[in-house]
Length: 150
Image (cartoon, rainbow, N blue to C red; front, side, top):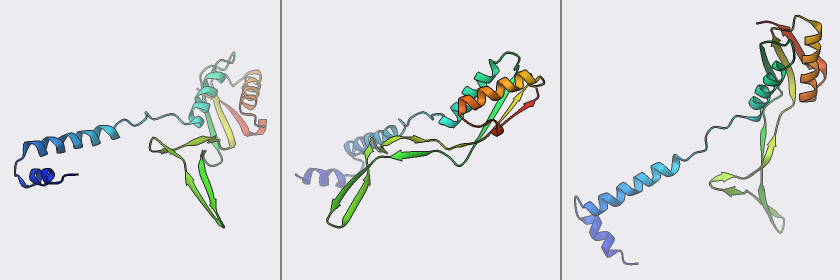
């Protein structure tokens, strides 16, 4: 490759060609980093919103607010490429598009659920809410607290 041309560009002061190349490089760097993915809601937040919608459809439940608490947080299961040479094992994360490839997400266990419902003043509504929550999250009923509120 001939570097004489490049050296000639760098020696000239106020060179418009060098300025344009530099400007294009800066613009490309700025726009390549701005195409980040929109923030996705976590599975836990979606689960809470879906549960709120589900419980609010129970006849008599009225206005509903649901809070789900968890043990810890979810973890992403990263895919690794493993190679063995003799006694040594080399383990590297598989990367695609600049990000580690994930085979899925492991969600944490549910610690407890609190449901505040304007219709929870009746036993039938409270029992229906508990049944819906325990079935949806596959948890025992002692982990669900249903309270009357607005």
